Image 1 (cartoon, rainbow, N blue to C red):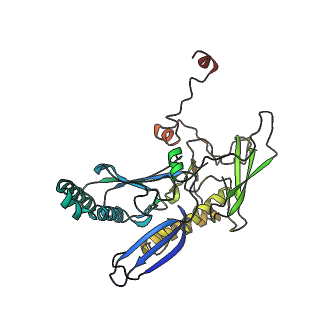
Image 2 (cartoon, one colour):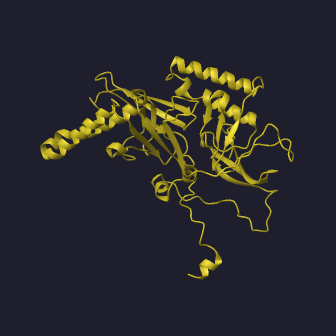
Image 3 (cartoon, helix red, strand yellow):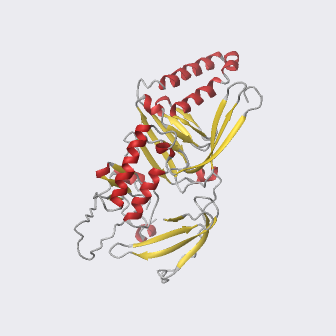
Length: 380
């Protein structure tokens, strides 16, 4: 679209664990050397939206990999600047690339503006200058990527350790966001039980799509009483097409202090598994991440991650000891006490009051729970 001669477009279907599958489209022109890279989501829309908030403090932060889908918006609050959703196509780039694309978009119509309205053109030139100054990172600024589809991503260069500069928040989509994404209200296919009906011995089944290959699959749902814990609903999906299996709290974070490892909530999804199975899932998450072990990685980072995987494998095989910490502010996670009802000398369970920030993430601060009693209702 630059010189209107023939170029070459290459397509690559790849799977990145943090946001499922994407299609990378790369175009290059031998005549004018113009190139362009775009991405499209090849997987299903995620169960929750995602918001990445990054404190940009150095030039290294500008080089962080970013996957921005076309339905994601990007904001820089310090400049009161926002790239609205659907104003750009999906792209695989860096934070510096996001800013460069915004500058290119603003400059596109500047020649016409300078003729039609010089004052507006002057103000836009000033703003373009401020955007370009951001790339030098002379002062810190905040980069926010908000995607209601849950398919965008900002690189964590500290992986598998926690990134103190990056906050990842998963949230429930609003009805307006769901409508923009073309999602209708979910209908419950399973019959809701009466109060007297006991579903503990019954497995309910409803149709769904595989989260990996999007092929038709079935999800089983069962109410289970876990001894010395509480009742939980287990949802398991098995796909006959690709063999993917999953069982659904996404509010639990995991920490292994000996490895300086921390995994934020929602990264692995909800699971009903064993401790060994959870450790293997962590290992697979690191091994299959192309941003950390693929062509885009550096030799020093690859060496550190290979060392981490080796230490984690030693723990899985029982060759090394480590502490395993699960922290769930929702209180819905559980680690089995094999000595129950006696005390497990190796297991410590600690209950605590949630902080305001934890309640905010769980949506509890705005939840109204008073005033629904029969007496209050009759007095209105």
